[in-house]
Length: 298
Image (cartoon, rainbow, N blue to C red; front, side, top):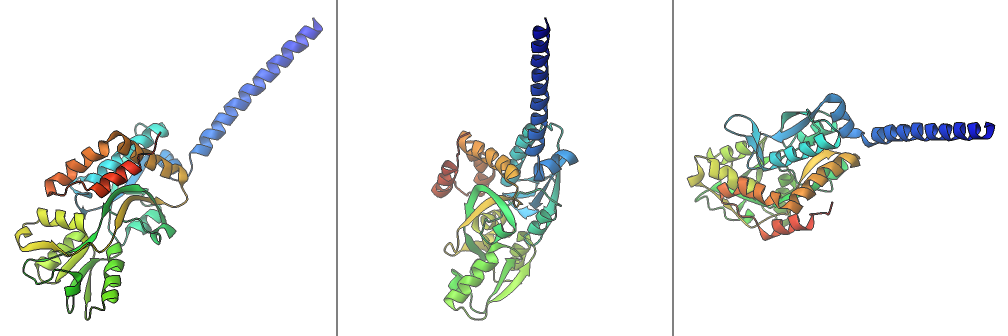
């Protein structure tokens, strides 16, 4: 009896110890899972998304003054993934307007948690922030008045060129001006893309240079479209990604997991047609290849 009692007690002690260890391990594993942005989002009960106000069809205000666009739709899919992964079905989404010169600072200081717009992933930017997989590719071109005589960047001598502060286009245009030795090019700093179009239409600038998808969309939406045109050869390769804070691999994985699912399912193509067909911007072979190459298996 004594031996049997000791054996039972021992078995009970081991079982209890294993149960406590398992529960403790599960709690620790769960706690270890949530760090960085996911932990912040869980604790606050909200995620804050930064978006550019005048970057259609990627992000801008719709007719009801709500953020809308291709990048916004992608980010809302990310939010769905976050809700599921951290068991937060009632997670609130707050939107904060940003522009090219404020987006990285607002991300780094914690004001926003995810940037959803038309930001080019560059190695120099990766020194300050992190990026998701590519969701779009574009090229730098220029918007001018029809009949201006400007057909290429080579025609920029003695011209005023509008560039959005903080945009990758600033380095692209300055690089070409130096390379081609174009004299007397004056830069007009602007804060957003709509201001660039207005600068050209009001003759404050001879050209506004930016990513071609944005230029085509702004022109198509503008009452001045008949007197504006997009000109010139592609001057750069612009791979867009959703921007987030550095050194947060768990959050980056959540974002990329969402994108990979959109690529695998083909839903990304539907989102593309929803936002770009209305502006006559066809899905390029290059972008289709980008989608297929990033359809990482589950």
